[in-house]
Image 1 (spheres, helix red, strand yellow):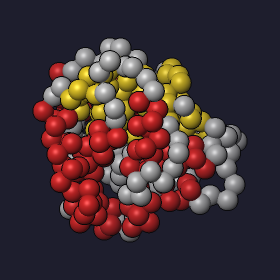
Image 2 (image 1 turned 30 degrees about the vertical axis):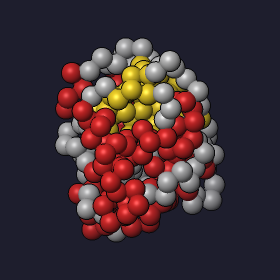
Image 3 (image 1 turned 90 degrees about the vertical axis):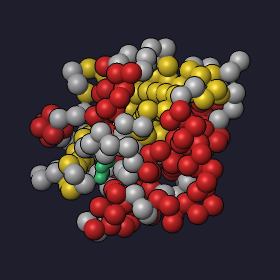
Image 4 (image 1 turned 135 degrees about the horizontal axis):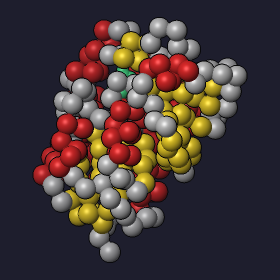
Length: 241
Ligand code: MLT
């Protein structure tokens, strides 16, 4: 049985889509969904996400580190920025990581408020494990690109196309899905030359985050599928699927 697949290139148009009964993959390659994958791979039991900075700050306790950024910069007073490289290299870790980011954690909340049946986190680092998981399930799919402040971006669109390339029995049902697929097919053999054109790639390089970019662009380096297990009082909890 074929599964319908849609791509949403920016949260600005998500009201045009029905999320009911669908598996929604939140995509924020640079860096939120990469960070969530790295955190669960590093050994954090839960990644707790929220939109609000002060709510995230209030969740700091003995069992949690608090990470986050706004406009790519670490939030003052937080333990970490939104850095998958830093998180992967922590020597000791508590049980939970709290995370808030400019676009990725906002997109999680939008998907929840829109009635998604299942919410997963996708990035280039976990694209094969994610495809294997989705190929074992039958829900229709939305690939939800977090973009940048309601603008489309290269890296999330490219990753959506990369995932489409690895899925079986899916029918692409909107033009954005064909666009994402075509972008991936056209650039998969010279991906870095293409991805380094991305605004946020350039922004992060200017801020000295080359290590994050390097680890975020390593396709299928992690075998982890972050899955939303609960949402309450504007707080979402992800664990390994
Ligand atoms: C986002 O949520 O937009 C990104 O994660 C931003 C970043 O980490 O630089």
